Image 1 (tube, rainbow, N blue to C red):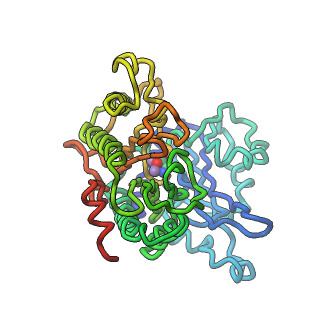
Image 2: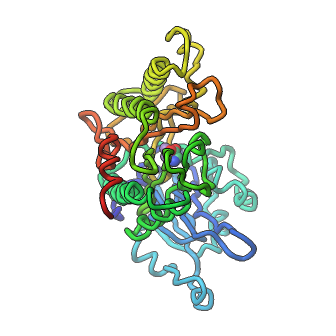
Image 3: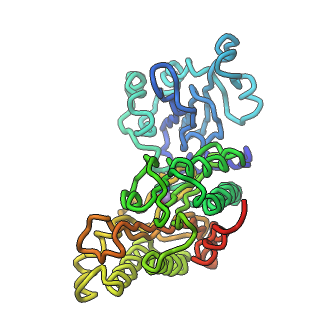
Length: 428
Ligand code: GLY
Ligand code: MN
Ligand code: MN
C-alpha cells in the first residue's frame, strides 16, 4: 500500500522542479476500444497514478505554481446513477475532497473552464506529451499567455527512478506471485500439448493470487519460437525435446515483475541445451554480481557482450580472434538486445537513462532493473553448429540496487539446471 502521505510527497517533489508561473496538467488514461463497443480493461496512466493513486478515468490533476503558492486541483467524474448502474460507482467530488488533500476538487467537465480561470499570468505549461497531446488541442486555446510547453513525463520519470520502501514491497509481492507461476510452469510443461495451455497455467496463477493481469503479454515460446524476441502468438505445439522460453510477469497493485526462465518441455536438458544454458546462466550471474551504486548500466551491457562473445567463441558459434569479434560486434547477431531496463509501474519503466546533459545516470540504491542476457540461434542459420540450431535462451531476473550492492528480488525463482529438473519432476 502506498500511503496518502507518500502521494503528497511525490507531488511536492514534482512541484519543486516546476517553474514559477507555471501550470501542470496530468490526465487519466482514456478507455481504449477493443472492438466496436467493448473496451480493454481500464488501466490508469502510470504517471497519473504515481501522483494521485486514483484509478478512475475522466480525471485530471492540475498544479498551479506561482511566486506565492503551489495549488493542486483535482478533477473527477461526476456521480451519475444511471451511468454507475452500467459501469460502477464513481468516487465523486465530495468524497474525493474528504479522501485526498487537494486544494480543491471539481468535476472533470469543468477542466477547460478552470484552466482558463487559473491561466492568468501563467507562462509555462507542463503536460505529458505522449498521453495528452491529442486531448490538449482544445485546451490550448485557453493558454494564450503561455510561451513554453514542457513534457512533464520526463520530470516524473526521474522521480520514479528510485523506488520507496512501499513500492519495493509491492514489487516483491508481484515477483512472489510470478515465482509461483514459473514454478507451476516447470511442474506442468511435460503434461501439456500447446504453448497457450502453458500460458493459461501461468496466467491462472497470476489471477488466482490477486494480480491484476500480466504486466506485458506473456511469451511462451517453444523451440525455434524463442528466436523471435517478441513472440506472443503462443500457438505452437510443445515439442518433447525442446526448450521453452517463458517470459512472463504479473502486474500487482500497478507494479510490474518481469521474469524469464528457459526450461525443457520434458524436464531434462540435452547436452547441447545444457552447454548454451550454462553460458547464459553464468553471464546472468556475473552481471548481477556487478550491481552496486555508481555502476553504469552501459558497463553491465559491455561486460555481458564480452562474456557472451567469449562464450560463443568457446562453443564454436563464433570463429576468429576474440578482440576482433568483439570490436566487430559479431556477438550482436545472437545477442541483439540490451542487458536490462528499469522496472516499476511500467515493465519498461518510463524513467530516463541519461540526465539533462546527456550523461548516463549511474545506479543508485532504490533503483530496480532487470538483468536478462540471452542467446538466440535460429533453426535456419547454417553458420551455427547444427546441435545448437533452433535454441533460444534468456534468463531474466529483477534486481534492486541497495547501498551495499544489490538484492536479487527473484532469487527464489529457480534457474540452476538441477533445480529446474527437480522442480519439473515434483508434483503440483
Ligand atoms: N518482457 C519484456 C522484457 O523482458 O523486456
Ligand atoms: Mn521479460
Ligand atoms: Mn525485461
